[in-house]
Length: 278
Ligand code: GLN
Image (cartoon, rainbow, N blue to C red; front, side):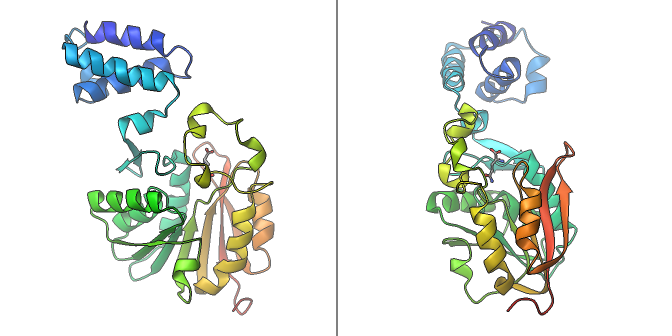
């Protein structure tokens, strides 16, 4: 079987998923240990029996709607390759907008906190892109933290990782910048999401009846963990940014909504009100 034939077969096998051809290409390239484009320039290449079997195995997993990134074991975020597996949510391109917003304010010497770090995508990228800043990242999930630690090590980023519920592990500490992509999907959508998303940890996704539970807690607790003039940057889910703006109105000023690459509102950025909080 040649690369050309294998891709044709894979595309047909994966006919039910959104982009069968592209996924077949990624899976085959992973099996061959090459990048997609060089593979496509050599479509006459013959697969060995072992490669055929491995490709069939990965294709069967994808057919069961296991996320491509879990099968490949990595996802690019801000140009860095993050290891991915079911221990944490897969980093999304949307979240790069949060990273970009944070980079507008993060400076060497600042202390920054990433709440609900998951794979560590935000904390590790911020440290890589602003090495002079001091990064702390927390997550309630020990599994997620073990993956985040692996990512930091593999990418050579020094980040302090702490386990605990939201601000619990940083009690008494203050930061110049707090970023978070917390869970934000309403509980009612459980079982109704894309099959791939349902294979990601529920702990990283669901956030109460209206999806705003974590924003309520963060709005209440963040001020006592921000320095004067400190900034909070939150990713928000579809249609949630206005509600989050309102939740922040009491204790924050300069509240702005920023968009992702599709031009859709993706997050809220705000500065702690002077004298308005402890
Ligand atoms: N952006 C993710 C999704 O839509 C959800 C991430 C989250 O809840 N923070 O699947």
